[in-house]
Length: 488
Length: 100
Image 1 (cartoon, rainbow over the protein chains, first blue to last red):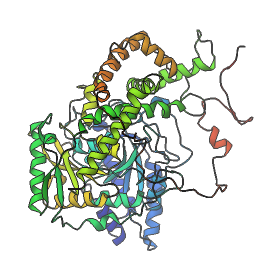
Image 2 (spheres, each protein chain N blue to C red):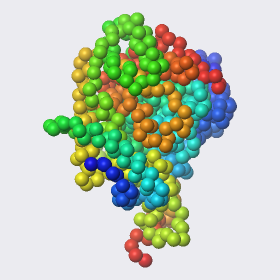
Image 3 (spheres, chains in turn orange, purple):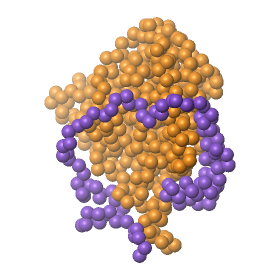
Image 4 (spheres, chains in turn cyan, red):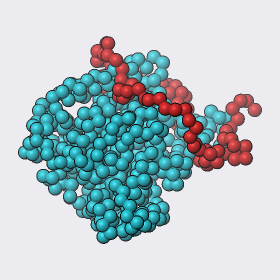
């Protein structure tokens, strides 16, 4: 059953050949088995999940049909779940019990999904390896001494290790797509505004977007169908019509124009990653797509632009953690004057980890008097140039293909002491969110060490359908997505 | 511009951001922020005269909605996660703000 997709499970429950309770029990047993070696979860909610599965079985027997009825699902721990603690991977929210559900959680429950737990992530989604989690790093199921990527590493591990068929993550600069690539699963960042951010713990509000993890493009489409759409509680959740994304998966990509940025296939890219992506392009071509060379001249500025903008927004968003209304408060010490300001400073010093402190300070710096124009405003102008590059490229092509990550999974501990090296892991993923564009990572092979490689497809604004169709078409001609890590 | 990001700069920022840092942290962050800012300098070299800033990517203004009363958190819910709630008074307790 662990090889079943969300679609398989839903259909089997609808036919009556499986029960939601059986599926949920098997899922929880599987988690119990692999969790000690992988640490994908921060919280598992077995009682809640089993109770809910039983309810759903009753509804299924009564003839009710829902898009995810009885499908177990894991949720990144920076998405609020009422009744299940939500930490964002931070000590400062260690005991935070959200008084409300994120809109995506409410929609998933209405669609019949069963939330089995909350997944590990870099603190406040800041990182590319899960090593910034206050609760310890997750491990890559393909090589447990390596990172699963981040920040949504726990969700990627949960899906890759077959604990759950689908999961939610959040992507600000690549936090869904990069761990998906490093763990050999599908991960997608929808267009900015496609999915409500209400209840997503804010990191960089002009970039953050919730996205699906799955093993197939079909399941990603199925999950996106449920979570997409306008939400009165989030003014940036656009009033854009939501198509049935699964209907776009026709397998027909004849005439599809795939843009290829030649420099992104070679420069600074591991040779095995480069080979995997080139082979994938040939698969798309043999199915009728046309490869077209395009350039994105300002893409090389995407990392600095991203880190200037994202940290500025983060320094402002994280000002709310002050030890007053919710979260951790530093205990008073003898030498404290015990005034409000001292409490703030100690709460934040003890509650935040090193990377969060670095980003808050970097963001404070770029927003401070004398540096605002030189850094923050400048970065926003270059963001415009990056968007224009994409606009020009999309005049000539329908999707743009790149590697998702320049390397396969790196070793735990390898980059954690060099923040800048860690930032460079995001070199191919940061520009799509800067432009607001949808992008997907699809498994496209392995290195000789049997580490997964991901192909990234970036689409036009609001055109998730085309990247999903291309990803699904690619899956029909390949078997990478069926490969299982030896650990399970 | 960022050349020689110092411990004093870190202290200034930590003060603005309300972060109590240890001496080791100040030294480490000064070095790390210096190298990140030097890397970011490449953006400052680009000519962007006349280029509009992108604050966000949405091309439509959010639509107005009717100003209607909707359910929100109760006082108990709002206080439930507070480190020091004053439940009977319906307040968040904080350390002294002005001189005692």
